[in-house]
Length: 125
Image (cartoon, rainbow, N blue to C red):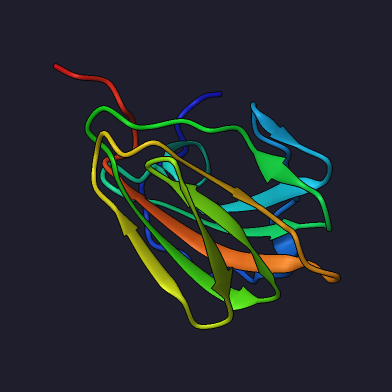
């Protein structure tokens, strides 16, 4: 996708369509609120995700990117460095580069969380 023009905005979350990104399965959807292709951002990728029961993202790690997950609703399982952790409302998870992780909705209702990633790409210069 092409990079959006870089300028300020106020945008309601309802205006941003849901997307299923690569390696996300079973109703693991995200709204790309701020990222290069939606906001022209250079340093931040900011999304809200809603995973239906049993939805998940495959295990992966990032070379240089840092991530923060902030759980807003529901509960699920997050695998971090080979160990499973229950995550639920108001849990904040910080992941430095190189940490293998995945998240899945193991609950009975949607798992809703924010994901903040910096930098926007995982390319090593």
